[in-house]
Image 1 (cartoon, helix red, strand yellow):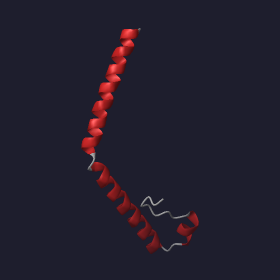
Image 2: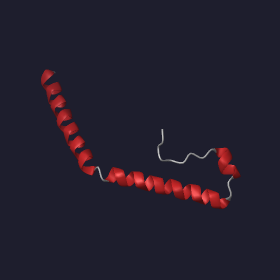
Image 3: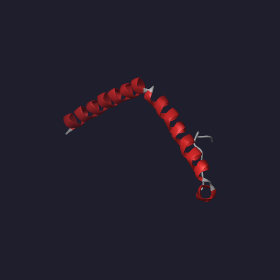
Image 4: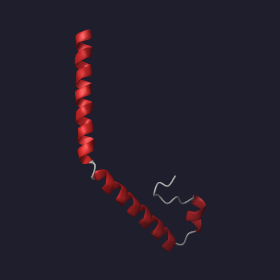
Length: 68
């Protein structure tokens, strides 16, 4: 399964030169940036889900109060 993250073991990190470490950090930050961009584009979907969850939660709470 490819998650888009570069996995660096502790042994590889210890053997890496400072330039290689900088490159590992740069690649990781770029990967995180791309993933955040994708998440930020989905704000409408998340707002709809939050609204639906609020409606369902409110209905369940109202039913719970009526039943007690």
